[in-house]
Length: 114
Image 1 (tube, rainbow, N blue to C red):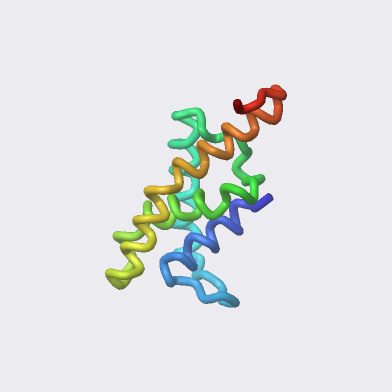
Image 2 (spheres, rainbow, N blue to C red):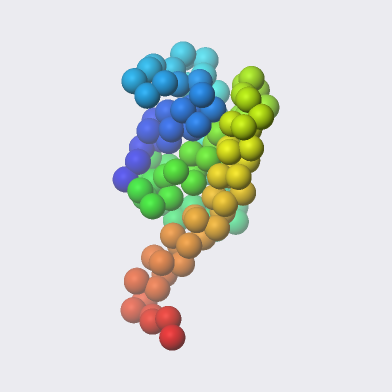
């Protein structure tokens, strides 16, 4: 399970703001925390937030981080290649998160796919 701080740092890495061993500025951290709250609220509104804000399943943590990065990509000077990579990951994120929810439903109800 990933914490909100881990999601925040992963999103900042996607934007190139945070290096592998770096520490984010308090401004970047606070802004990405706001982005995460916005993303979580959006997922909750469409019933895809099947996890708590501070316990994001590993199978969807990258997707959630991608949505957070996409929410703030316009505020950071990123290269065209990075912009396209973040965009692509964000587009795929809802599918990944939905698949995680679907897998939880099937495993919790003992349903089988035929």
